Length: 418
Image: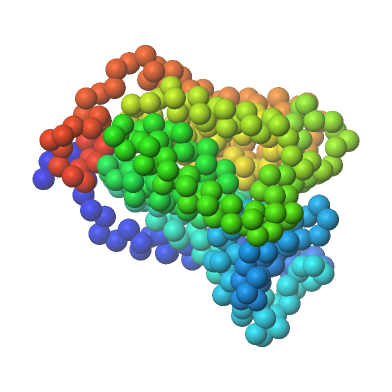
């Protein structure tokens, strides 16, 4: 076996399950133990978690096509349609045993949380597996545990523990698995994982242009169709069945300025925004980056490109929440390791940016500091992307007819060392 060969990971799920149990425990410490010790009136459970569970009740009731009718007024379910299917068993258990939820009427100690919480927070396990699987494909041996813990803190914690967006965690996990297959020269299978990620959370579509561009030219059209076709057909079915509510959720998702940080161009008096044309700017960035990086398949370059695209939301969203940035930060951390560098600096800067979100000092001061941290996070990756556009692609990462099937792009990377 040569040094560059991909060595199978004997137990890829073991550490993922162990860390997943730690994540579940951490979630309960934050939601139940800490509020109890502090003498709060009730447990601290993210409100969005209840909206997802309410949508899941439509599945055992036989009205799955109507999930987007969940909610009242400005607050409604607007994620992809797959999470309600995943949460359907919990909804059924809640119905059978009459367990209390905290929606539509707030409950201080909702009984279903002891069933719902562990089940939902267990989404950390596929994410941690995906991180390790991708790193193994890239030839990384040292530091995999550190990177799994980093993603657990930088991505899982804000998305799942703080905001209750379990669909974001599953979407990121599926995206990482899709990228693993791309680097292993299985882009068509990877495209199906990417399609599933989009059906969990719509932001995953931002990865499609780079994913398609990094695929071999002969299969790009098929990769594009497989990536976008299934979620488009699925979402179209909901639009046909229940256009009034599905169109509201899919085309006019709501965001609340008071729960995040309104962009500098948004009036400080604005509380609720249903849609904003500036969001199209991120899609434009994704398409432009994909076009510029066509025929480039180096893993570090691809990961950096997708990470930068995700981080572009920071500059185009009318209201920014911490979990919006989590996927981009995670990708940039993994990209740094993929190129053989140390990820510690990226982890520290990314953590500082996320930890700034609970703070609400002077608005101008906050954005100055946040832009500085985002710039520090993006400076290196953007510079390397620019250099990558002016340098010919290495021959060993381009498709060759003689390469054995399954050897993969990552198989030609030497194991990076600390």
